[in-house]
Length: 116
Length: 113
Image 1 (cartoon, rainbow over the protein chains, first blue to last red):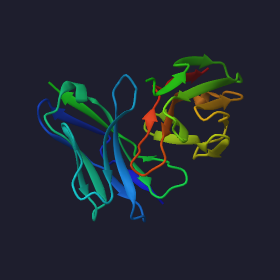
Image 2 (cartoon, chains in turn purple, brown):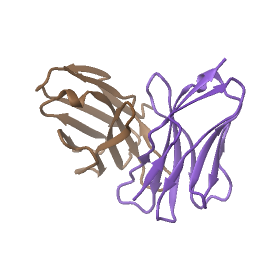
Image 3 (cartoon, rainbow over the protein chains, first blue to last red):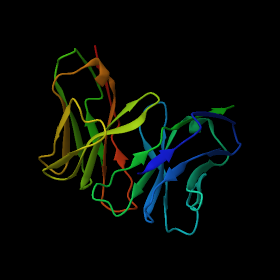
């Protein structure tokens, strides 16, 4: 069965430093997609980055990169040069493919606090 | 472009009352979903729909019903609200396809007293 595990309930990082948020996943499928979402205190869910299981390069979107290690089934989010606005909850999610439901399975989330 | 619109944003219900949450998307997405978010429990899927006229149960469907009469709308109903249904509810929609994630609505904060 699909499962996403985020082992860090809460993390602190100093402003301008890099931080890695851990995500491991469990799937028996070869084809899947991995997603990260950000949820600031205002509550909305913001899509950050996507990695496909067949993508050879790690995904990057501005200050966000995804450290994808397929053999270890990990998809860690790296935020470079942290900013105060990065303080939020972050969710890792997975979608297996093909799928007749398109469901994303979410981890429990990691709360990140950026210290000035 | 509105994306996914949820109404209402906030609501307080008394135990036993009923209400309907509306989700509307303007992106022609096939798939739509209702989640609830509770502290420490992440996002849990209530019901979902893979197309107009179809619905299916998620992991926590009890106490909720849904309908998708039009492709762009997905309604979540609470027939007899209970305090355990106090939560933040999110609607999401998506294209079919592996690379497409969800577009989320802004959420509905529901309190049942």
